[in-house]
Length: 251
Image (tube, rainbow, N blue to C red; front, side, top):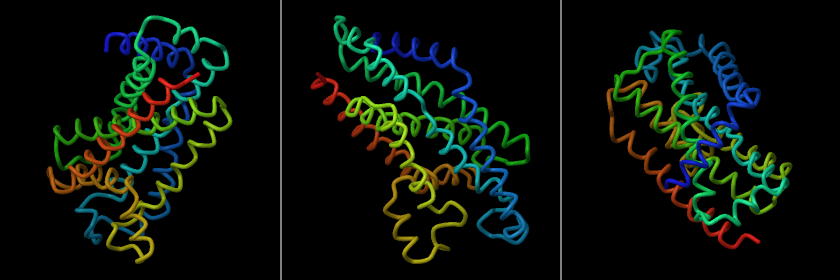
């Protein structure tokens, strides 16, 4: 783990030197939050919309913005640059575990996810969104968002290692957008049409979104919180296993 942390620190310094790559991570999710609330805020007024639990529509939309921000990880693209530039081969030639090469960027992405989630949630609080689950819910939201960032980047690294192509890796990241919209993004799941409800139920992102939403609207309702963490744990285990297997067979 020591080697992974050293490589993670290097990846964090790399991100610090390219702040322009972080701008879309904050701007685009906040842009969608403002636009979605502006379009549907009057349709779902806080006083008469039961599923908002007395909050504004922004509280319902905040989880979508958090997941979108967590899915802008650039670690896989930096990995492709290292492969194309030959630095990745130099890393593989050093006497460090190959798993550390994979874990290093994931550690960095988790750290960035914590910071980005904190910034977006604090901005939400400034604009009147409250967290019904209190300080515990605040930290659980940050942790779940950061863990989702690790899951997303883990699968993007698979594409990077397999294709060794920046174009293919960048295109692969677009798969998240259909997954985001095949969720109860604008209304609760029980208000969707039957085909859409089935699609949302089969979509793992739904459970992460509903966990985040529960932390905002409810007071630590564990029945809705644990499925999101379970989904993230399972997907993370799969992503790590596949990354380790691929890098061990990398030639």
